[in-house]
Length: 88
Image (cartoon, rainbow, N blue to C red):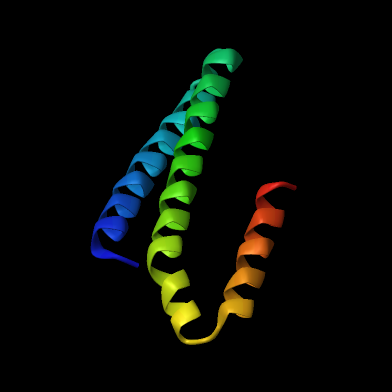
């Protein structure tokens, strides 16, 4: 993983963790369900952004390396698996 991607991923994880802690507190305080759900949607979007960042880093660094090392079938198989997981 590239240093910039790693730093950005860790920053996003910190944001997600903070948001999840906020959701937990909202539930503990029995706040309005719709308000809690709005926050869970924000967490989901943040996770999707993290996934996009990780995928971009993978496509820019790991995939070209694997192709150069003649591991094209492996990397394509992994990407197909990720695609299937994302679309379940």
